[in-house]
Amino acid sequence: MKPFPRHALPMPGRRRLVAGTIASALAATALPAGAQDAWPNRPIRLVVPFTPGGVTDTSGRLVAEYLGQRLGQQVVVENRPGASGNIGTAQVKGAPADGYTLVLAFDGTMVINPHVFSKLPFDTLRDFAPIGKIGDATLVLVAHPDAPVRSVADVIAVSKERGGLAYGTSGTGGTPHIAGELLKQRTGANLTHVPYKGGGQAMADVLGNQIPLVYTAVAGAHGFVKSGKLRALAVSSAQRSASLPDVPTFAEAGVPDFVVNSWVGLLAPAGLPAAIAARLNAELNAVLADPAARERLRTLGIEPTPGTAEQFRDEMRRDLTRYGQVVKAAGILVE
Image: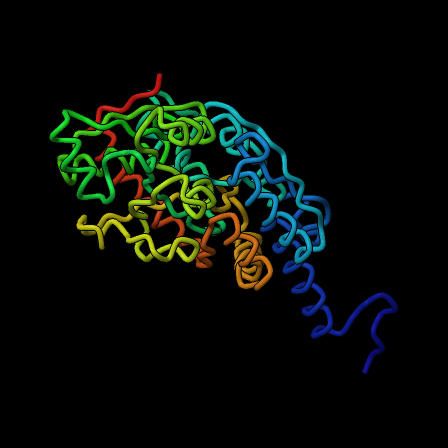
């Protein structure tokens, strides 16, 4: 038997070498540029398309803190407010789909704005990859104690008898506004929407008895209800709020199947690699299962709702349909 040449390999060894080289080349070409390195290997940017200090911003910062600890990289919050969240959200649409840019998704921006704005710089379902839902913020209808209403039934009856009742919200096209319009459509109540430039201004006017009703998040009204400065009539969640357990749901108050929550979640630019999307969803769900994180979110009035990316996409698709119907019937439009 002749000896092998000095630089040759036996045939089985050569096959293994060639096969391994081809596999490595295929693996490299199957990954996007830079993905060969372990993800994440640098800080992640979380765009919050609203001003600092609100519940949406605060919830985003809380999730960023815990998510960064789990990923071993800082998650840096970047506020990009404007146009009801459209500006910051559109910026993320155009970012690289590499897992290093995320956006805090708000239901008003993602499933209501497509119907109330005549032009929108993004498509909710086409331009983004869902990571997961963070949670639901319960909404509540509150009244000044001197207002002639003590229940939802009173609101419906009095609004018809007096030719209308005004209700304030944080602005045109927000989730509380949509909830108020849905209440009108379901019950025939004669309600007039009064939009404010933020929930704080609406709350100040109902506390000063300048307006009888305000539709808002439980977190913003909780303290005033507990102190007796406002009367809570109903919450529009499926179950009673843990922070206002004595307040009935709208279903309990006589309006069946009336569930309107304001939710927040995480999205990435479309085209996010599946492995990164799965890792982000798993880590987000781990954050939402953390007792300390859950308690802090509940303090903000947000009930944590872990789940899959597919469940989050399905909810966005359903809300796009049902809120579109409400907006069309109410004739809401923001130029």
